Amino acid sequence: MTLVLAVAAGALIGLSLGALGGGGSILAVPVLVHLLGQAPAQATTGSLVVVGVTSLTGAVAAHRAGHVLLGRGVAFGAVAIGGAAVGARASAYVAPDLLLAAFAVLMLLVGGLMAGRLLRHRRGRSPQHAARPRLDDPILTFRPTFTCQCPRALQVLVTATVVGLLTGFLGVGGGFLVVPALLLALALPLEYAAGTSLVVITITSAAALAVRAEAGAAPAWAPVLVLTAVSALAAVAGARLADRLDTDRLQAAFTVLVLGVAIYTAGRALPALL
Image 1 (cartoon, rainbow, N blue to C red):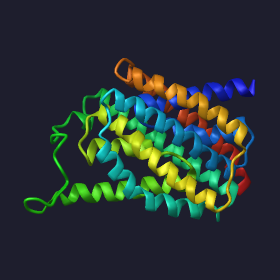
Image 2: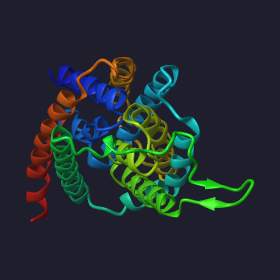
Image 3: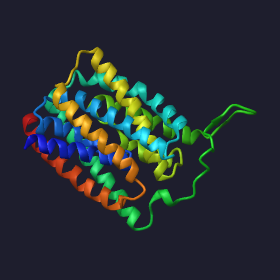
Image 4: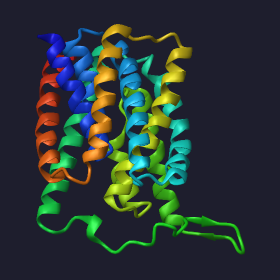
């Protein structure tokens, strides 16, 4: 039964990453802890394997579909690497129960933000409907003269650093932050933001995993590999179905799931801290 639930969770993680460019990774840690019995430190390391491989697979599929702006994804991911390294090192000094409690708080915050975004979208006030610059409109140029859209550059710098910190510290891909950042800071349409975010998640997950591996952190490989395989296959399907799925309903169902898992995780972690 546990294996069946893990496979189902892996499919959901991959489908969300492939179709929405984020969200699924927030479930990887609770699945590894509560369904597969791993310690929080193992789970946050193992989740980086799941998220990194799944995102890479989904990014390849999205690129073939023409939904990835590779240069912008690599630039955003490169900025986030520093934050990922700092977050990964800091996680080694945090008690397991505190790590899970912080993760639960993050899930509650993400669920609330997702719910708010859905409500705004249904009321016709979603920011993605606002006028946007062209896709080739650069933030920085050096030729023939130097120009800088500095407010947008600052948005990218701050958001990328925060994404990196969360990726390294909590073992999440950060797609729930990357997609809005690409929508707003880089002014990308949703289909490009979702595909490009997978490039960013791949880079930040790899950087955080490298730091954790250097520090000697290792997951229990057998369940992690099973979860990774299922999630990666589902990510390919999600990327191919991105144009056909009712993303509003998918996001609504996923928001409810995230909030439910957050409450369960908090219920398990917070009493141990009190």
